[in-house]
Image (cartoon, rainbow, N blue to C red; front, side):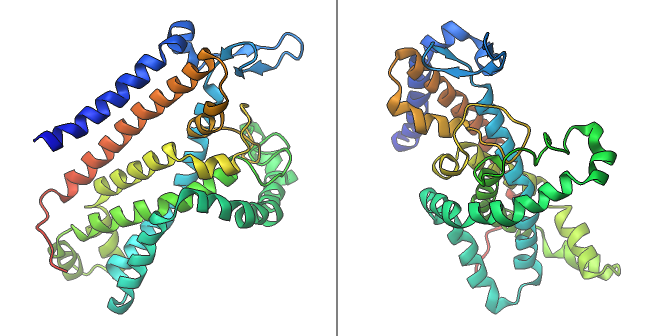
Length: 318
């Protein structure tokens, strides 16, 4: 009981320390800390994070975290579900073990290794091949004529601006690689928990193999799959090192995915050791407190959804 309660004590102590250390920033900026900004009188541009003048607003870090996490989910979820369906329903027995091991091995690779791989492999690939392809599509006259009203195409759209390789898109892609094994492994567990009688019933009624997977497996496992996606989102929200190495680290908000930015975790990693004032340090700790609370809520919701599917599943003997 003492060992179990110590876990709650550690979490409570972390939360209490974050709350106490962020009081200075909270009392000065309040809730507008997360959505307000100042206007530079000379350039008339928004100023969010200004350590020199002691003005701190976290909106660009929230924006960068949400955009990179959304891009990561957009890429990783279809791939992860495809991997899980193949391993559970279609993969030959002799290949299932090695593929499962390699998929789970991706989750064990250190974050800094992913960051180095992104710098030397991913960023040149995006800069020279992927980004020019999407720039051509989103800036084509036909695309601009049809979808110009959305504001997502053209020179100031999703793929406008300077193509540096670094930026929100690179951070989203590296996050997708990092959360793919988590979503795939949990989705596979949830799909395995679906009783075989459901599969047999669908096949007996004349369903094809894909109809059986879609109707009997994926539909019954959808709550747990959503839980695994949310758990992957929790990992993406809190990822630090790899994102800090490829996102560009600028406290700005741009519509283009090719532009540089910042995330909540990366700004803490980059600036905490260099914070010279108490207000600067308190503002960074307040960002950490927000990230801590969001991560706990996201992971708790994900675990609840996964448990809702697997709670009645008997133990399996491999």
